[in-house]
Image 1 (tube, rainbow over the protein chains, first blue to last red):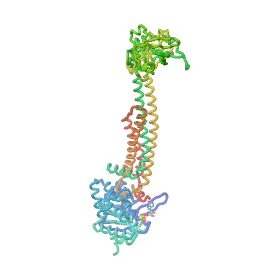
Image 2: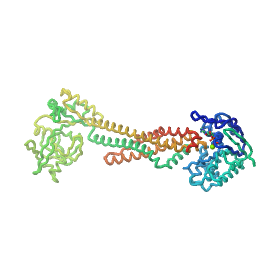
Image 3: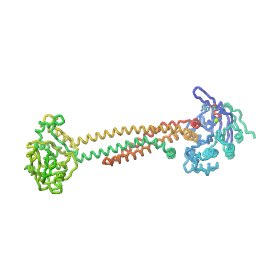
Image 4: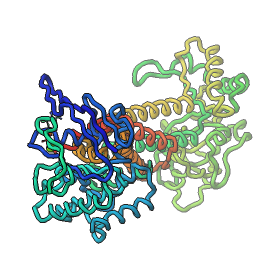
Amino acid sequence: MLQVEELSKVYVSGKIKVQALKGVSFAVTKGEFVAIMGPSGSGKSTLLHLLGCFDHPTSGRYKLNGINVAGLNDDQLAEIRNKYIGFVFQQFNLLSRATILQNVEIPLIYAGINKKRRLEIAREMLEKVGLEHRLDHLPTEISGGQRQRVAIARALAINPSLILADEPTGNLDSQTSAEIMDLFHELNNQGQTIILVTHEEDIARHAKRRIYLVDGEIRYDEVTPS
Amino acid sequence: MIWETIKMAVHSLKSNKLRTLLSMLGIIIGVGAVIAVISIGAGSQQEVTSSIAEMGSNLINIRPGTSRGRFGRFSKAAQNVFTMELAEAIVDYCPSVIRIAPRNETSGHFVFAGNNYLATLTGTTTDFLVINKYRPEHGKFFNNYDLTHANNVIVLGSDLAKELFAGLDPVGRKITFLYNQHSLVFNIIGVMEEKERGISGDLNGSAYIPITTYLQVISNSRYINSFLAQAASSEVAGAAVEEIKYLLTKYVKDGEEFNLFSQDQLLQTITEISGTMTLMLSGIAAISLLVGGIGIMNIMLVSVTERTREVGIRKALGAKKKHILTQFLIEALTMSCTGGILGIIFGEICAYVTALLGNWPFVISPLSILLAFSFSLTVGVFFGIYPAVKAAKLDPVIALSYE
Ligand SMILES: Nc1ncnc2c1ncn2[C@@H]1O[C@H](COP(=O)(O)OP(=O)(O)O)[C@@H](O)[C@H]1O
Ligand SMILES: [Mg+2]
């Protein structure tokens, strides 16, 4: 479903060049649950941004669902994100002035789905994450764990081939983190492909496979020891 | 999709009402000022124009020229030709002129039953009535028979009748006019209606006698002080002026020797002045519109910066450049158009109140409304496009990490 070959990324700011990724290659098949691990600054977020079609790689190839993503322009990448990828961020990234229901609607608006169908889907997704009784609340009126559930519902709304999560429990306490991870676990059991960035062993334990990055290179790529 | 975007824009503007209102203020005031100025200009001009037209935009005043200086005397050369024969010549040889009335005036004391009243005695002909649309209210005006026989008859203006005859019917009585130590007695044959001030000034404070009588008993000469000519219509008033000028130059060598003044000229001058004023004020108002536009751009730029993260989120969720561009552009347009509409309402209210106070007609000009609205639309696009493009160009990764 997803193949990267010799993917590398160089950030240039002024005269300073930072090589955040140095030729990374791996493949992910449908239904996998992968944890990307590594120390801070090792290039985890950079890799996730490339996988999420946020950014253009400096070199290398990236195929998602058979589409060669590396050659696409910004608007084409936006379309790929909208069609295939659901994001979950550490900072939740909900629109603070929109209700929970409206937040889940957003990707569906850009997918050009009509209002009636959008509301149906958004309600269904919020029900799936257990927030059907909070539809008209603002993000500021609910807890951190609930916000992350809204973000997951929003990611699920477009029925993505791939869910990408960047430290999704980084801002949550351990109890709530465990609940969120249970939710990811359950989604994966239903066949959802998930790639998750974390530096916590406890979190990575939920994944079936882990890719460990050091200094922009894959140190190891292995099945999670049980 | 566009509808969704408009709803999104309105939602976002509503969530910051005070700021939205403040940033629309420039447009509201600018459009309001333009609308008010144009509307007030049109209304007052209509008032002036119609009151001049009522006086008769086809009337022409002809006087002998005066020598220079404030108390300059009538030019001798011109005065010599200002006679009733000249009046006949003007009517005969100027095809655009349909009638002409002489007007000689002097002031003195009218006396009745021991009371006296200072007023003007006017010598003229029956055409004076037609030209001024002036009618006797009681009794009658003198006729051609009185004119040819220079009869000793008089018709009183309404003020004079009121002041000296309080309640009594003046018709059939005699009135004495004291002038230069002369005492002249006239038979009153009519009282005129009350008339508003017109081109001939205040008619109510005068009394009227045949010009022939006037020349015989008052001035003891042949000379006429001034003529009031009427052109066939206001369209040919200009032609009439030229014809009279041409004729007069045959009698008087120097063109400076007489004065011609038509209502049409006055009208043109007033229209020009008020047109210039409206243009000038509209220019000033347009500048405030421009300032209003800059205000909107400023707020939109602040808004784009503030909402960098929102743009990042929307892009992450699949918004393309055009979606972000239209979102911000429509926000700017919604502000400028709402501002425009409020400004139009505000301007028309100002114009209405001014019209009430100034006692002139309230004129709504659909053209100026259309113009003001499309102008505010243009301002919205022009000043909204830059912030919108800036938002659309944001890199999603950078936008998402923006604090
Ligand atoms: N936009 C950027 N511009 C310049 N350097 C960057 C940028 N983003 C990340 N980097 C650098 O790239 C390296 C990898 O960063 P990142 O992928 O964020 O690491 P991680 O998520 O593993 O902490 C770091 O050295 C970081 O400073
Ligand atoms: Mg990171």
